[in-house]
Amino acid sequence: MHLTDEEQRILNGEHGEPQRLSLQVLVKLGEAYGAERMVEIRSAHLVGSSYQIAGEAGIAIYTQLVEQGARVKVRTTSDPGSIDFTRWRQFRTPAEYAERQILIAELLDRMGVIPTWTCTPYTIFNVPRFGEDLGWSESSAVVFANSVMGARTNRLAAYVDLCAALVGRVPRFGLHLPEHRRGEILFELDPALSASFEDHHFPVLGYLVGQVTGDRIPVIVGIREATFDQLKAFGAAAAASGSVALYHMVGITPEARTLDEAFGGRPPVERIFVGKREIARTLEQMSSGNGGTVDVVGVGCPHASVDQMRRYASLLDGKRVHAGVELWVCTNTVVEEMARKMGYVETIERAGAKLMVGTCHNDCPLGAWGFRRLVTDSGKFAYYTPTTVGSECVFASTEACIAAAITGQVERR
Amino acid sequence: MSSPRVILQGRGCSPGEFEGEAVVSNQPFGFWQGIDPQTGIVIDRRHDQCGASLKGKAFVFPFGRGSTGTPGIFLEAVRNGCAPGAIVNVKSEPMIVACALLAEAFFKVSIPIVDSLEKDPQELLRTGDRVRISGTSGIIEVISRV
Image 1 (spheres, chains in turn yellow, brown):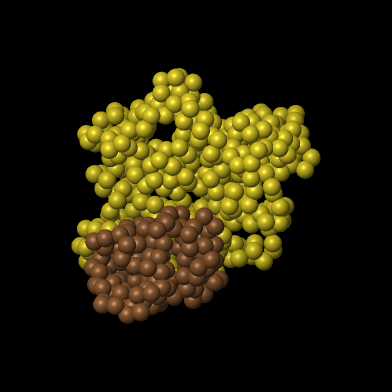
Image 2: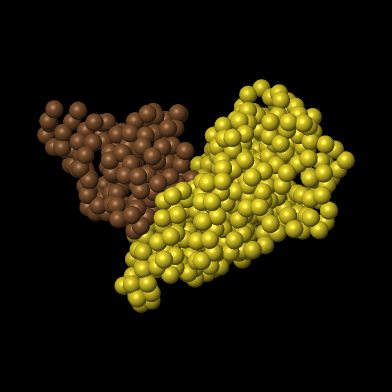
C-alpha cells in the first residue's frame, strides 16, 4: 500500500504509540482488502462505547490508550451505552455493571469523544455530507450515512473505529470506492403494494431485503415517498437481518435518481419481486410465539426523533399503560430535551411509559426482568431481542405497539 | 493416523504461525452471541459446533456473520486465553480480520488467518486434523489426519 510521508512517520512512532498501533491495524486491514492507500475521514462513530460490546477487553484497550495520551483527531461520537446514565436503577441494572459503563464513559471522555450515546448521530451531532469519507461502525448508522446521505464508510468493527478516529484515516477499499457502490440486486415492488405502502412496512421490507441481500448492495424500486424516520427504520432492519451497509432506493436516495444510476449502468445480477404476499410472509417471520400477555413494549429503535416522540405522545395522551406492562421509549439526550420542552415527555411519562435515554433494550442487561413477551415496531429489535432479552417477540406497527402497552395484550398478526 | 502430507496455498489475511488441531464447520459463524469468551466454547444453539471448544484450535468455517461488535467478544476471549489459535475461511470478512489484527496490536497475541484456498476448506480439512498454518505465507500444511 502507498503510504504518505506523514503516515510513514506515524508508523515509525513519531506521533506516539496510540497512533502507531492504530495505523498498523488499519494498514494491515487495508492490505488484506487490496487498498492502494489510506483516505482521510471527516468523522468517526464508535460502537465499542457500550460495555456490553466492549467488556473488560475494551476497558483494557481504552485504559492503555488513555495512559499513552490518545486523543481523537476527527469529530468522534459514541453509540448508545449499556446503561441510561441517569435512570439505570429504574431499569434494574446491577450497580457493578453500571460502574464499568461509567468508567468507559470517563475513558472516552479523556480521548475527546463527544458523549452522544446514540445510534442516530447523523441527526444532529455528526452530520455527514454527500461524498465525505467516514470511519463509522454501528450498522444502522453506517447504512443511513451511506444510503440516505451519500457519505462513504465501510462497516468498521469495534475498536477499528477508534483506530480510525485516532489517526483520522481509514484504508480506502470497499464503499469508499465509487465503483463498489453500485447496486447488485433489484427489489421490485408490486404496484399494488407501492400504492398502499404503510409506515410499518418500511422495517418489514428492510428485514426482507436484508435476508435476501446478505452483504450485497440492494436497489429498491417502487417506493413513492419516504420520511427520514421511515428510511432510518428500513435501513436498521436491513442491516440487522443481513449486513447491508448501503442500499439505493430509486427516486429517494441520492445515488439513485434513476434505476440506471443506481446500478451504475450495469444490469442487476438478480431480480426479486416483492408483493403483499412477501410482506405478509416476512411479517410472520419477524414474530415468534402466539401473542398474549405483554411484558414489555419497545419503541425508539433506532433512537426516536422529535417527530416520533410527538407521535408517541399523541397516542398516549390521556391513556394509561396497563398494570404490569413496561413501555420503554428509547432516544438520546437532545431529543429528550426537545421533547420535554414540547410537553411530549410529560404526556408520555404521565401515561406510565418510561424514557430510556442513551441506551436501548439491545444494549442493557435485562435478565433481572424475566421478560417473556416483547412487542416492538423495530425490525432491528425484532431480529436481536429474542436473543438479548431472551423473550418471544411480536413485531407490530407503532400504533399497535402503543395499543398493546395500554391493553396489556397483543395479537400476532 | 499419518498419511502423506497435504499442502494447501491460500491468502494470508493476518500474519502469524500456528500448529494444532482443526475444528471444521460448514456453517457461517458469528462470534457475537456465538462464543462464551470465558471458555472458548461455542454457545450458538443453531450452529453445528455448539458445545465445541475453539480455545487454541484452528477454526475452519465458510465466513463470518459479523456484527460490528464482533471484536468485543473476540478480544474478551483473547484476553482470557480462550480464543481460536488460527482461522481458515472460504472468504474472510473484514470484521474477522480486524479481530486478529487488534489482538496482535493490543494483546500481543497473533492469530493467523488464511482464506481463498483453491478448494472449499471443508472438503480439505476435518475436525481433529493436525495442521500447521502460516498467516504470513498463506500456506496450510496437514500434518496428520484423524
